[in-house]
Amino acid sequence: MNKKIGLLLCLMIFFVGGTMNAQTDPKTFKVVIDAGHGGHDPGCRGKNSQEKDVCLSTALKLGKLITDNCPNVKVIYTRRTDVFVELYRRAQIANTNKADLFISIHCNAAENTSANGTETWVMGLHKSEANLAVARAENAAILKEKNFENNYEGYNPNSPEASIIFSLYSNAYLSNSILLANKVQKNMVNTNHFINRGIKQAGFWVLYKVAMPSILIELGFLSNLDDERYLIKDANQNAMATAIYSGFVDYYNTVMNKNLETTPATPLPVTETPVATAPAEPKSQPDSVIVPPSPLIPEKTFQNDVHFKVQFLSSPKKIALTDPQFKNIPEVGCYYENNLWKYTAGDEPTQAGAAAILQEVKKVYGDAFLIAFQGDKKITVAEANALLKK
Ligand SMILES: [Zn+2]
Image 1 (cartoon, rainbow, N blue to C red):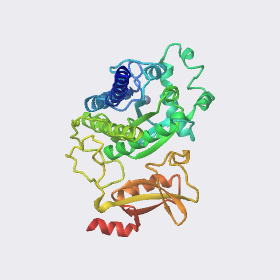
Image 2 (image 1 turned 60 degrees about the vertical axis):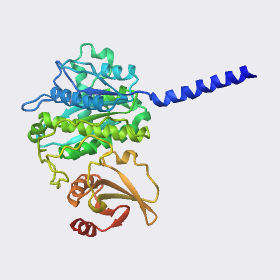
Image 3 (image 1 turned 180 degrees about the vertical axis):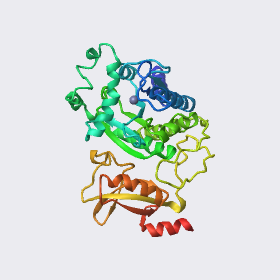
Image 4 (image 1 turned 120 degrees about the vertical axis):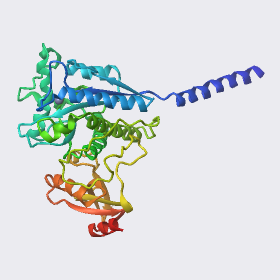
């Protein structure tokens, strides 16, 4: 009898101990940070810069922020120096490490030098020629490889039929990819004040092949003088790395349904004033204030809890916020009023901020208009502005 009780106690201690151990030793979350291009593949070029350098510098800064501040997150780089890494190899690194997240960092370029702004991509089939062109330009890195035919299942980025291969993509990771894309894109444009080009979808080889949620960020256009001037500065790269970091922490907290254990954050130095290329939006923070990359500090200050949004769609049926029709819409939200689900874009502390988003949304939903809330209560835009003057 005594022996039995002893054995029972031993078993109990074993199981309780095991459970406690599991709680105090959470699985390490792995993030792959992929700096685009490198080595003999410079990527796109600006007047004074090459894409590979801007990507690497920003990627290393992002990795350092995560490593310094998140003890439970492991950072894996696809490259840490100016070396050439094949696209298939980048995906392989992520897959063999069984990573939880893949973040690829790039810069854009266009023949039209006035094209500017930040956009974040998730894997999918392109809906426009413009989207296809961006993916094709990034996939062209393959052509810098010897024997590329052997590593890409016959895919050739120059062939018009090539992107058909991406129709085989399974959407298993799409909703989490969109979630991360939204959070990163929002933080990026709040930081660099670039035009918000939104979340987009196209066939990027590197995203196609990774078996985990993944995004590809086009920080801005090196072919645009204002964007380039901003992108090449060290302090601004720190600011953008911090913006991506905050998006990552926010994503982690949402997906894991818990707060990521972060040590007191040491923000990277941010001293440069962002170049104002986006429609003027009053800043809620003076430039000299460094917003630490902590999930506890909101990026925007809503005076009197006043929120300006853009309403672009009403529907009697509820539509998932991750629905593909919203893929180019920033910060999609919804509310229920008069038996209709109403869908909104943006969440801004000022009318000017929401007006900038309205311009973008109107390209897709011509009838979009501004609305305002105080907390959850819908108010008129005039009432909202009056509340801001109080
Ligand atoms: Zn690139």
